[in-house]
Image (cartoon, rainbow, N blue to C red):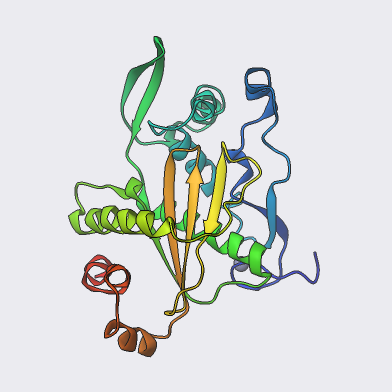
Length: 253
Ligand SMILES: [Zn+2]
């Protein structure tokens, strides 16, 4: 551990961090007799300092509970919701801001659903951490540029600009993604998979994350300097305008 540097800040690493957090992957005792397989083998780890270890900052559990509980995920996420998340909530009643409980029907079985007030900032930090971890894993160095997280899960009625940015950005990236021609990676794709785009002429690369075969999160990694961004704005394609243009400026203000 002595010589390893943190995947985020390059200070001395004190531990290994799972990317994404290990708690997203169901435990054998909850799922093995249902799905007849284990989901915890060959997980990705990167060296980390204390500050950038999601487990140590307790962000990992919030991420797990938020993602697993979303409607539209696969069956594995439901089992995770019924088992592990119930245990987490019993341990920490304040973990989730629950708006209301509900029940939905799948194949005539009633499944409990929780509507959660998502704390965007916590989630944003978690996704940035995962992106930096995967970048380190792939490139063996930490990422130095700017990061923008885009996902439709960041819907919020009090922030129409942010919501619009996330919805429009997601749709554009989704259609661009068909042309990436890069490998979709992940040993346990029912839980998590990821795909890096090629790097474009604006030193920008997009990373697609998928959780429980239902939730897409995109992370835009760009290494342009501020001057290069100004210069780039004059030569933009429609797609890049969304990333550097008015919509993003509105969102950052
Ligand atoms: Zn660090």
